[in-house]
Amino acid sequence: MLTLDDVLTLAPGVVARESEGEQVVVLPELGKFIVLNQTGAEVFQAIDGQASLRAIAATLSERHSVPLAQVESDVLVFAGELHKRGAAHPFEPGSD
Image (cartoon, rainbow, N blue to C red; front, side):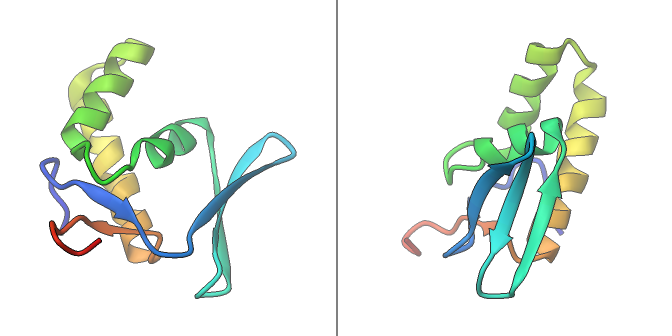
């Protein structure tokens, strides 16, 4: 289970494309794709192997003037979905 202190990195081969105003994440190894809303796209784009989920949530909370606790909860749920679908995984130093 992910925590706010986890730092995620994208799975190998995962790419994102914008299509008709929506962000689409393509998982070529699994033959799947995920369509993201604007907030999901912002979280996805912030996953860089350096920023913790807590830091991503803090940035979004400030940017959109939404209570931090709400954003932290939403980011954790969304990151869990990305992890479950194989699009992202916890960063482990030395694994790149």
